[in-house]
Image 1 (tube, one colour):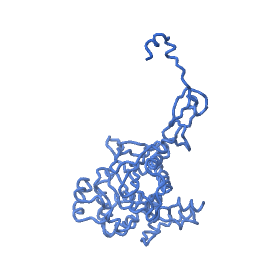
Image 2 (cartoon, helix red, strand yellow):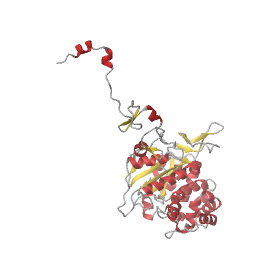
Image 3 (cartoon, helix red, strand yellow):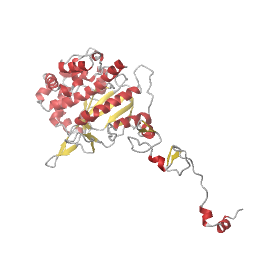
Length: 414
């Protein structure tokens, strides 16, 4: 047996410590160098590391970057969360009077006024259920961490610093995309481009909403940004039997699906307790169902559940525009008007006066498909859309995932 202690006594310290070490080649320059950073089993030296590209999203240098995206961000930056996943909300909005700065991301759904009191701002949240095409064998190309990472990257927005989107499991669909809350100004300045990108890439991945079997689109609105009377008027309008056909048409659902997932009829107990439910979400849990047209059971939001799923960007915008316009309309009308037969006429008149904010909704209402009723004309919107592309405007459709401007106009130029 070797006597290692004797060997150590005989060796000088320099003999012990100065053992020759094999120096690997730097993967980048090919020269034997001390490795500064490893990537997937290969390493680069200090000088070469300094020359590597920086990922636009995580802001780290990497060997594996293409189109400004590093491989970890593209393939493993997120995962599909469980159905019960509910992170702390990140409110996305535009800084007051500072629209040229990056969007504000905050944990507060309000701003503090001059008196030091909170002024709650209307924020919107989106849930989009997506699945494979109904009646075909076409399947999504990428799922799991890959699709979740893609959604995560898109959710970082134009600035690459936003945190708008995440992915969840849902038993009714392949994957559900959920947004953090955002203001209307954020939607106009940042959100439109973000969601336009999202629906395009989901369709590129063979996912569908409108043409899926059982998908829906839900829109949440900040509860504290609405008065109790606003919520009562909103409920009175949506559940008014006189407005049933209008709500069915806006939803784009088949009647059986609407009644199953977003019942547009309110029972007598709910009508009797409507003010209590508008004031307190616990009362809504006692007196109403969750699967109703407007769900009041959430503590911080009211949830519009009527909409059929869609990856058609025009239809997506139409849905959000309907919710926003209804929230503003009820603030300026009486309860009597909201609940009686003239409510719909008043609401459509509101759209005629404010068509610039609701172009997709106005075009949808004035161009019926599948036997839908026409609700108004909105000539200015029709003329504007016709000028954009007179050869293809008649091909636009809301009743399919691939009938929006982006799909029709791009196909015509291909």
